Amino acid sequence: MSEPPVLYEVDGRIARLTLNRPERGNGLTRGLIEELGACVERADLDPAVHVLLLSGNGTGFCGGYDLVESAEEGGHGSRQAPPGSPLDPAVVAANHDPSRVWDPMVDYAMMSRNVRAFMSLLECGKPVVCKVHGFCVAGGTDLALCSDLLVIAEDAKIGYPPARVWGSPTTALWAHRIGAQRAKRLLFTGDSLSGREAVEWGLAIECAPAEELDERCEALVRRIARMPLNQLRMMKLLVNESLHHQGLHASQVLGTIFDGIARHTEEGYAFQRRAMEAGFRQAVRERDEPFGDLGRSTFKG
Image (cartoon, rainbow, N blue to C red):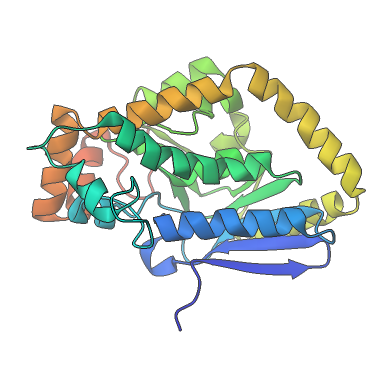
């Protein structure tokens, strides 16, 4: 039997959730997203758990959606979905066919379920700490930003390059995390931050050299785990309410609909066609090379 896409382990008062598709950069699929939501719920219901630690196996935390599957094969549905549902891969593929009429509400019904799973990290009654190493880009940032605290390696890369073509941040948390002007600076260009810059910009709470990241993260989660669970629940609920009153849900509806639109513009269709012709890696190369930040670079001009 193959290993699950998300590993789950409880260590005292700490629940460890580990993205486990290292051969694909922990690329997001519907199966991984569903498993993540289930693991968050499992930890939230476990009275022994006081804090969740989210991390990723392999060379990086998460490279976003598995777009080899999405762009080259026509979508990221679920093979377990009822036939004809918004998650049916055949429905997803048909709704990305340029020769057919795009139904934005079918698209929203599919993508909003991903947002719901990502937001389980924020809505979980217990603190969630996200540990990022290597890279955290595109849809991977949804996981990092929906977590309560971000600890990142100094040399890691974090950002949303799909702002350049074929994407919009569906969880819409950039402005809430770093302010409107800095969010615009990143989203107007698709540029990324290093781990050190992420702390300077207020996106992450702490950074550390890659070889010290585990130690710093452990110190933080073990310190949080000492707190009474009822106090942790109250403090998280108190701070989260301020986000909700700022209109987060409305921003997420708009961001998710815009993500669908971005995949169905002239440029979005061209990117999809290029991915199908030359492969996703080549399409990304052609997207990012003009900006000088292909791969692990965080060059910003």
